[in-house]
Length: 474
Image (cartoon, rainbow, N blue to C red; front, side, top):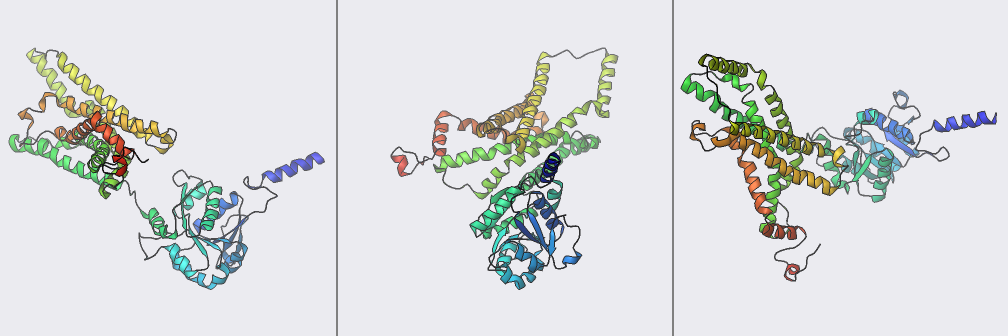
């Protein structure tokens, strides 16, 4: 019997939440609101060892709540805990004014969001603080979804932004966030609540510039290629080449866009270096446009990688195209009837193989850059390793892809026959920005310039007193 009792005692203990000792008193958390998010957050807190009390306007009619949670009226529930999570829309906050005495001195956690960015003059959290001036209002959990809490798919939403005017209240809320296996991020006072509430309403904010830029580039290059390869032959030869718009023209647009976007990843870095050399200091802010550009470099690179993948796929289908098979058959028949063959050219073979090899190596490094930019991979390498891959191997990728395009052009760059209505071939346009970036980078790594730039980045200023004394402030 003692053995059986011991086993039963162990089983009942194991049934409790793992984060709570059965001898310790559970902390009570009150949640106003029994909607989707309130239920999901309450279930997660119950699993992590908290005792949950819901406040509802109709406690008898509340259903679908997690087992183990208690449902009371707002006033009764507020007496149970000193931390109250307000899982209610702003439009229904008015009833809180009737509970000002009960809520006085308590911590109110506002988790609400709006339908539009800057929908109200003040944030919801600041409005709540005005309604209940005696409470300590903290903004949190508004960037976490009910679905993520229910399913446990928290990979994309582990960070919880927290802000508030009372440091002790914020710390208690952040302790709850940590207990839920989330990562709190202190954003300062309640003035930051507007920014936090706008964050979930932003649709890919760092992807907008790369997306719009790539769309503009594709549209421009499409019409450029259509003029050269479709309209021009029709005007002068009455030749219908519209079929080129399906495969041939996109297969020119995608590599050009990929190479241009890759060059634009490294152009802001060399631009910033030129600005620092010109100013003689690193302690002056970059222009806003350059700051925004530098923050979008990762997104620019990933969009460029996407276009590079499209180029590879479109290239792989070339042998099965009807036009290509028709040309090969015609060439074969022509050579057979004329009993002539084209002599083998070692130079042409070298150029062709070099062109393919450079493309393969460039694409391999391109993919490597994309993989290392993923958080799951970048978190496993230190800062120096990450910088080596993204900077050194990044420039090597740019060199290989630019060389791939140069070899593709061969001797045709300066040949007037490639001009159509005085317009050069599209691949010539693709080389403008990459070659500019590589030339500027080559100048910046010259010892005489690189030494000065390194000193500036270590804190040296051209016109400072410490510079005149030969000292550097770090």
